[in-house]
Amino acid sequence: MTAISAPSGAKRAPTGFLHTIGHAIAEVFHHYRQRQTLHELSALDDHLLEDIGLRRTELSAASMSDEAKIERDLHLPRHLAG
Image (cartoon, rainbow, N blue to C red; front, side):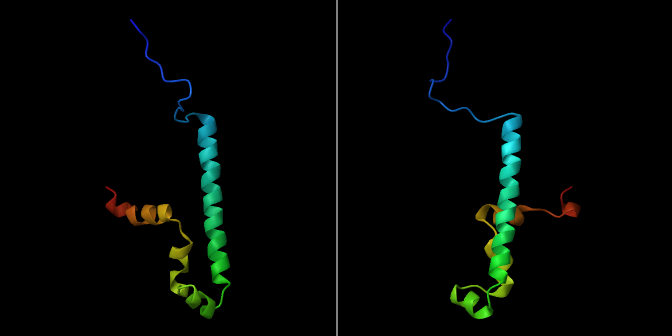
């Protein structure tokens, strides 16, 4: 019987403890950058925000990445989660 193996250059999906730690660190960094962006946009006056096409009421959404917006939109309230 012949054993089938992946080519030596093939990348395996990362698993294990180090992957989990790396993912957690990446999440913390992502949330830090999102808060920092919101803080910096909040410091601008309304005329500058208007120049870049934003309103003060849109700052929270503007500071989110596309992935965070999708996650927010898919979130179900606990009472609907069943």
